[in-house]
Length: 328
Image (cartoon, rainbow, N blue to C red; front, side, top):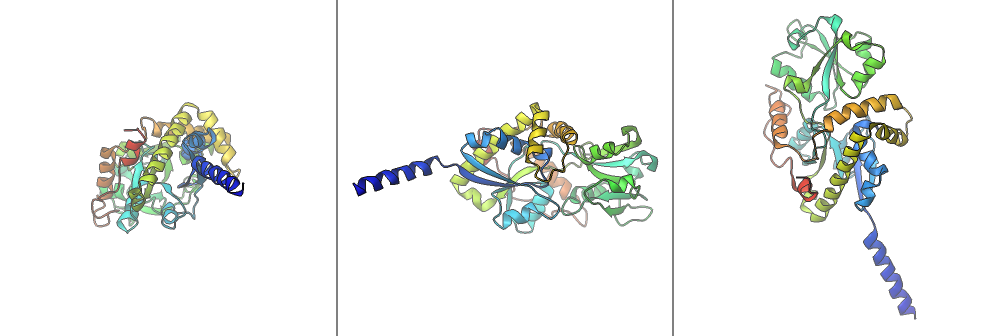
């Protein structure tokens, strides 16, 4: 009888193991906001659970570097901008892009019209606000593309190390600041400045856009077929989340608020952010377009004496995961 009970118990344990969801930890690039709506929607609507996954989403912040988190084993997959990921890869952290939910860049410079800046040729002699911690790479590449020094002076621009707010523009410490179409630009408007008081330069329009918000894993993990299979389920369910968020911006915004443990987000701002983010994810099924990758590499290598990367990466992206997910 004891053998029978033990056998039944073992069978139940094996059955339970067979039905257990696979764990996935995702590290975001920034705090909980609609920039990452697809992942929160996939979690909230049960898309991950339906795929057999138990997904943990870890918000980022000013003191959190996704590259450091995944290098330390704190995440299976991270959201990162390609300039930072390729720079990290060249320095020895073998990150690989497995999917690209964002088709377009949301980065731009937003300038006060009263500064007199009408075109990029008017930048010299002015102070421009720039994010750092890896976010400066697209800006530096653009200035090099224009042949404008970032060392100040009449022929160059003075770079103001910008915090993650729009104060330098509101307080007129800088003629232009870095903004994302879906966040800081909206903050400027919410502060009472009207669109006709501003001049904007989108990186997409200037031909210097680089890929943002891709999904990256460590190269060595892709040697494990079980990991590739798990990531395929994750990417497919995440893209279901993104497409749902695009079609239901108000519901997505509410899901973001429900998951924002800081309580700092507002419904109005998240709705506006979701509508703008949807413009960037539209047209992407998650599969990286090699042409977009090549354009990003060319921009990053056009930094003259100080390029973001010094040589063309090899093995920095793969379609293996999206192909397995049926997204090709």
